[in-house]
Length: 345
Image (tube, rainbow, N blue to C red; front, top):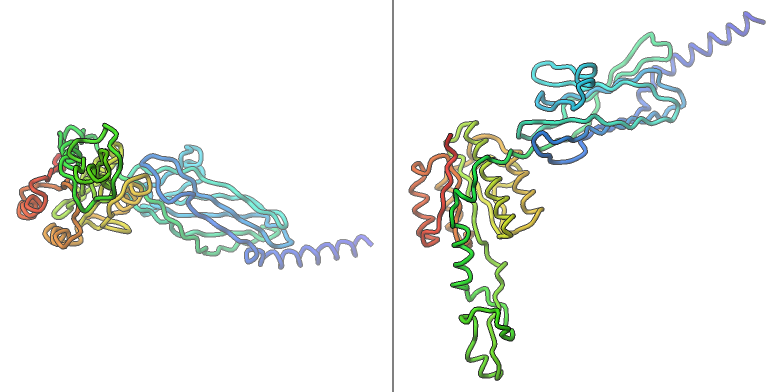
């Protein structure tokens, strides 16, 4: 009887052992970053979910993911015990076991101190059989990426711009564009006298003023020129551009953004204002590659064909003496309202 029981037990174990070799095919794994963009040194997560859809338990499971070495775990313990480095890539490893129809949900806290666009690298699933006699490894298709914004530049851009932004705002109120005419309203005493329509006031027998849509035109057009800039200078240019755009947002001024750089997603951000408008530009700067896609003169050619509608331009460049011809064309177009910020160290 005991021999029979032992024989049945051995057969059952061997059957389970053979079946467990295929349980990795019943494991569904998802790995992805929990957000699209992050600040430098900001914490983000690699979300990991593994689900065992088999009736058999998985006695051993290891999940590994590779990423650029600039992406590092926040936890020193995880860095020490669960992170490897090879050929400029970090490998993060999580191991556990899964019961029948059980799921594992976990996350790894990560951080990155360098601007850039980082894709999640190769991901793998390693499983062991029931008796721990063998293991199998499978490549996973987990696609995800994170974009790290450029750091804010330490330049006091408001001081560097002087009264340029204030002058642009004043110009709009002194010389309203008739194209921006929106309608008429009663004079309240708060409007400037120049906005009073004397003919309409006489017809209506009360003081009447013109109304203008001051959101229909940009206050400032920001131009980023990366032509001839090396990697270090490009980083400075990206940070300086971020500081300028955030200053415009702080002052609630509308702006557009154009560049000849190898920016991510889009080189041209049309006029607008607000958090999403700024995030779109910062994402383009964060994911940008070095170098330029075309010359500064080619960028000015585009603006000269009707897309430039701003009161003035802020040009961010390596050295204005290298693009003086294009600057002269801008000054002629804007009546001299061009401010240049140089990224010199």
